[in-house]
Length: 338
Length: 292
Image 1 (tube, chains in turn green, orange):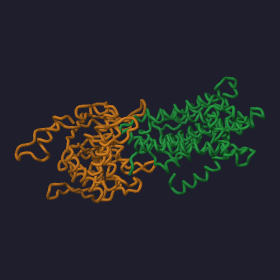
Image 2 (cartoon, rainbow over the protein chains, first blue to last red):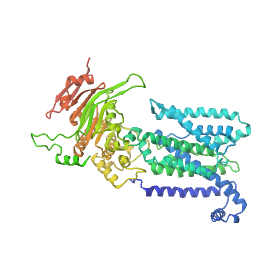
Image 3 (tube, rainbow over the protein chains, first blue to last red):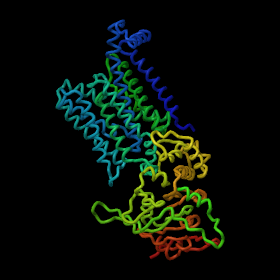
Image 4 (cartoon, one colour):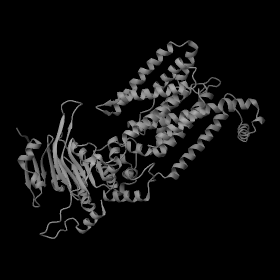
């Protein structure tokens, strides 16, 4: 019996942050052209100390201009999807809830595509389209999930699945109207891909990530009580309506953020929270930050594999997470721990 | 509880009245005054109506609410918990209308033990019981020494002390119900509500739970309202009975006054007989055959 203390919270996060740094370091090292640890260390040291002029331009291009931005995107996407998944699971009292199952990712994807068709020249159009799509899909699913004036978890999940399939059909329809060259990129993007650079500065993405996760984290103690049911939480003093609203909006924004950057990367929102729960327990005060860091680790790892496994060809990272994620998830399910 | 009342409690412990002279009347802790409620679809005719109900619950008193399914027991409990506002009349706890209290204050004053609700993810007994301290803190609510002390006391009183390191999903029904009771006690409420707490429990666990409730109500001065189907256990452990039938409060009174053969036969729609044991506690025996 060890109650969660601020000390344990910080230590766990520090440990995960350490692992993340290590993973990032090796992700920088591996690629079509492998770089020795010594060279990489020297390059990073010189970059940090401001002596970039002493670094060969080849290395600088590969490490700082190609691999590093992609790793940053992977971290942001992983953290967003994982926290969104953990949030939806508590909110719907369903361990299978995830941005994909709920159709929120499809909404975000449709929003992105529409913004590409109608407003491609506007800066930041894709992420805004994705946010709008995610929020609209959440609202639609929320509406479909209401039964007798109250939100029914199962009706909501079903509503999500139906919304997802309907939106996927719309996306298919739109894709057939787009010219061939674009189509290939789009199909790749829909599978979940980090090779296209972000449409907006990563600083903005990071800010949105922090705001979204921060908003959800303010409800962490409430989410712990929601795991035991809405009625029970209400009798313990939780403002259930407010908590649900904050978490729905926060999780929609995070999903929109992830999808606008990388398309549909599956299994992250489902797997990472479950693995973190197995390791550290299901207390949301620890789960949310640990899931954010764990999600970043998972997607950086997956993307590194996607880049290197069949190098020089690259796999979409979404295919990678599904290849690894699906068997692990089935394993967890069969052990009765998911 | 205000300090004056605490003093009054100390001056007159339960059952310590001078023989022949009744205790000075204590104001009721919970007063239900002509409270009614009606469920109706928007603009349509009402689907169910709980007609005006009046009764009081004093501290240290255990009141059992009896009636068939659909008689309005759960609706009454929700009115008492403040999650429903009465259509007419008032439900007051120490003079304040419960449905108007903010959520936090309400959770500090009213604790509810509901029927078993599966937990989504595994949690330890200790963490579960500490959740009862939620309404007393803010923010991330890291456990304080005070919280731990209250939770330990609650576990002890509910007889769940040896379970504190166990996982909730690995407990038996009786053990789980004691832990749920402990969490409610950790809320340090004035009023404790229980919705069919003995459902799914074997007879030993049922008796154990109600005996504990009885003792906690007496020792800690809680007012307790318990909705139950167990007529004989209610007669044994409750001070008073509220008998509901199809949304009407038929009778409020001591078990002896409420347990009348004709009345119970009418309410429960089955032939039964009522006997009184040497302590004057009624005992109901069902014959199994239906009334006309």
